[in-house]
Image 1 (cartoon, rainbow, N blue to C red):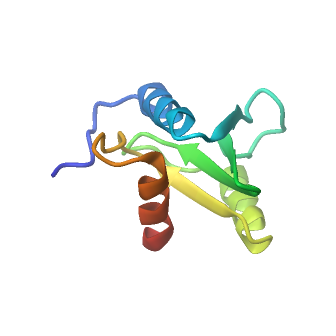
Image 2 (image 1 turned 180 degrees about the vertical axis):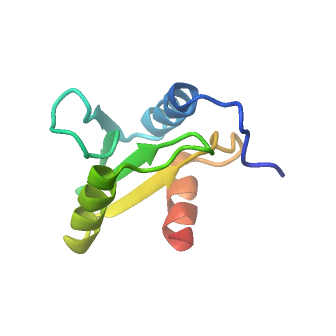
Length: 104
């Protein structure tokens, strides 16, 4: 099963994930509009837990400021995922999040 598609735009990847996450009961907040630079793209809230996702194209790279903020969040105990692929449609958002937690 191929997970990575070089031609998928960051916006398309993000939209697909946000749709899936909302369908699975997550509260999804886009942080770009409410925070300073460097924060991940979205914050997920569910069952008293906050998680963060930064979306990048397969060929994309994190800025220095993004790396610093992600490391800061992880030091504080938050899960932060960097996603560069479309979600697998046969899995729920919760199953995908658990799989991502194992990969990091």
